[in-house]
Image (cartoon, rainbow over all chains, first blue to last red; front, side, top):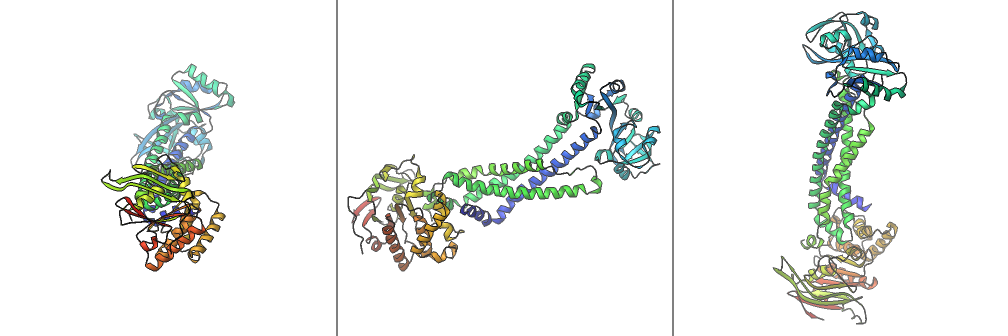
Length: 369
Length: 231
């Protein structure tokens, strides 16, 4: 109880200093939570886009980005007839632009594609898509920012396409994208195949044999389970690593703030620490006081930061221009990880101050009044 | 009135043997070959002008510092750099300083309980002990007050309470009345003498006040880092 009083008293004695230090941790944590959640959300949306009604994905081996992958039509025709394959979709990804929008994701798909089958059709129908030669279907968000409706002709890249339908999907990339028939997309992007083939197997236990068959028959291709793809896809790994690195840098700065506060705190109460030593406090007890102070600052800062970050994500999620692109779903394990990292940062920041405190020589500190 | 002298049969609790101590790498000599022995139950006053080495000798006896040369014995054991001071500071020695050295933002109760917290004493037991000491020192009505609101005399009473919290056998008092007026100095001194007697504590006290010093069992006169005379 008295130990807690000593700890709290010291934090309250220099309120401004304590608050500044807490703010450092809070903003670092908020930034970390926002960046990581947004990126994880983006990764989740992209992987969700690939795993729509499928459990495996086949693409070109050693490509840095799926946009550069090319799986030939011949392979698709072959694989889709394998007995273990229940359903296969060839999907071509492309990036196009329109006058006011430099980046629009384009999907070249067949009418049987799960993304179209599962979407809510606001306007038009799946049958129109299958019959259309050059018509495109827009995600609801894309229709909104392109100010297009069914019947409109929209300029996309170097071409112009008539809109035959508008769909709504929960996935931000799909909702902000342009769906065109696969053969149209192949002509448009000058490709003779697709970016990936998404596969639904008849029996889940066939996964390994399917993978093996792909690598044996098509050495330039790789077949991965969705979860395996999410783990190994270099773009996802780079994004995740970047998010954590940026967040950790922020937290490191917050940690320096805590270290600075704790050093100042120890410097200004050398005499008090000497009094505790003379009255029998051990090095461990003195260190515990300093560490507990830093931990309290970090904990309060981290909790505030998580609250600020959550608020920021809610705000971002409600900005109409970003609707569908930001999956602001909070992930408890990420929040816990950030909280632990913040505590660890605070504790690390207090190591030197604690070491300084236990090295204070009571006799010298008490000699001068 | 001078306290009766203690029998020479009693055990030596503090002993300094040819102790030398200086500061600033020898530039400021403070103790120059001090020999001193304090026996169980004695109240000994160290007298002398400022800078003669009284406080330094107290610090050496409390294990807060080490001599450059010579030896310091506490309960017959030499204090060295390897001595574990925690049991000594927690249970054997209590300190009272001129400037009381209390923690300003804590209450009297909390300040007094610091040694008990350090030693891990059970809370109920510690509170019972505090009540007992507070009644004797006359600060019971002030226990929930903060230090800033107390007079010098009350602060020193609190410091004495804190020093005796863990029932130490030795009390090292460094000018305990130095910052008090004559009336308060007399009261605090009497309290110290009464408590050392009732608690069976050996007291070594540094003081400028010769009149108070002469009321201890023994008075040691120090000058220029040496023991000048003992009475």
